[in-house]
Length: 255
Image (cartoon, rainbow, N blue to C red; front, side):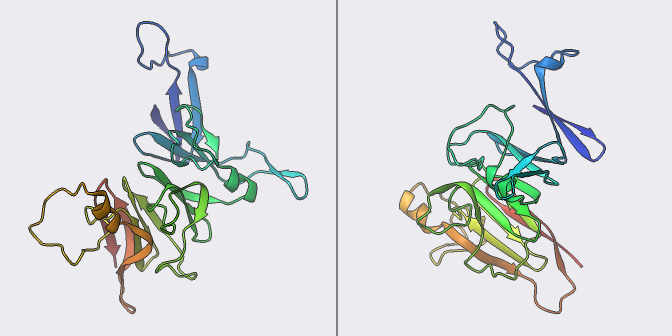
């Protein structure tokens, strides 16, 4: 799979697998039938699932109430592994890398997606109006402790995140997530490596041992959005960007 920039868009090209002795994916120039192209304005991926969001002018969505078709400004598409519902289609059935399909809930409700981030087994979508939705494995989708996973997008809310907090930034690590407003950063998911930014009472500065105990790892999980960083009122600083790596997190400030 490759991304070819075209102005402010991307052409995501995935070649079909060639049968025979050579099992590697191979792109054959000049044969359009061998390429699957998705024209996207954004792209994100984990190790095993992929997301893109397109302009969607040619993607009709049926309005069940008035039986009229409408075209959303952006259409979010996913492909790849789906064992925890990280494709957001209401199932746990995986799809081929070139089988990009829309998220039914977003299409049906005409929810406009601004950005998407993919973790190892979860996805988070930032939508217009400052709301964010998570789907896939919990706790990295910010749901309560009794939720193991969600196959459909669920609104990220509760915890320290208030109704008036308008989310501007999202990022996903392997098993944790950051969401941020212009002045606050919230984290949730696995904190086994302290990637959510919280220490435990029994932590020591020289403790570099690996923790393979499931019960101990469960204690480190953060299940609802928890305030990690807050810029004091009156400060000229603003959050400029957040970024999650596999087991770490970064926040960039500007003034």
